Length: 164
Ligand SMILES: *[C@@H]1O[C@H](CO)[C@@H](O)[C@H](O)[C@H]1NC(C)=O
Ligand SMILES: *[C@@H]1O[C@H](CO)[C@@H](O)[C@H](O)[C@H]1NC(C)=O
Image (tube, rainbow, N blue to C red):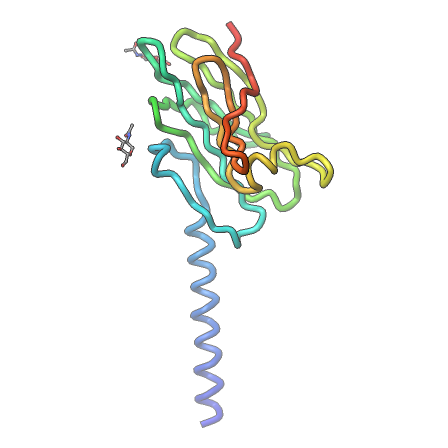
């Protein structure tokens, strides 16, 4: 009886460990181009996980396709074609605070911009973390430049201009 009980409790803990592993794996989020309005993921309990969103918010021009090329040291996501209202998105953990992600964006008229989309901040400098609400960094390519969504204040802020 006692043996049976301890067997069943250890097997149930194996089951819960398995569940945790499955859930954790399902939260990993490889780069993908998706419809921006359906992109989400809000596992607030998954600390240190960040989501990057590179949104095509272009309004004018005959060809509003955006070329998006992002990566970090040791990882290059390659060229992505992102249509209007779509986004290129990925998620990652930055437990050690060492990751820096960059993106190169190019419009069909060859205007372009290169900038960092994620970097580790100190406890006293929280420009990015505040705007991303420490979870979702939403960069939006618009006609006049690249904006970041300031999530707490619900405004888009112009951060980078296109270069010719
Ligand atoms: C994105 O999804 C919304 C809602 O499902 C849909 O109305 C819209 O047409 C989609 N946009 C694109 C570019 O696929
Ligand atoms: C639009 O521009 C993209 C690059 O941003 C290019 O790959 C594509 O061929 C262009 N499409 C047309 C119809 O010109």
